[in-house]
Length: 116
Image (tube, rainbow, N blue to C red; front, top):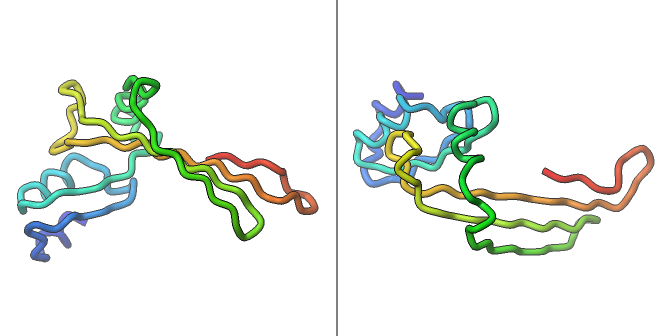
């Protein structure tokens, strides 16, 4: 990915990449080109995930939406906060936590409630 980013003119863009690319080298490459990034962090990025998990999320205001359709009900909640100084990931400025809970009509052989 870093090689591809070096070939593109991304100055001033917002680059969105999946969890596989959430690496400090990739962040450094993006920031060196004068742009910003949005990364997904999953549990396999152990150190960063643990740091983010330890943030005081219960004190961060939340925005929640509820939606129904296609045989399911969904609740989505997002919280955003500034990056504290002890999070040492290149160029990180803001963190968002997104939670989604989905309820589906029960069909044969499937659970009634699923949470992500």
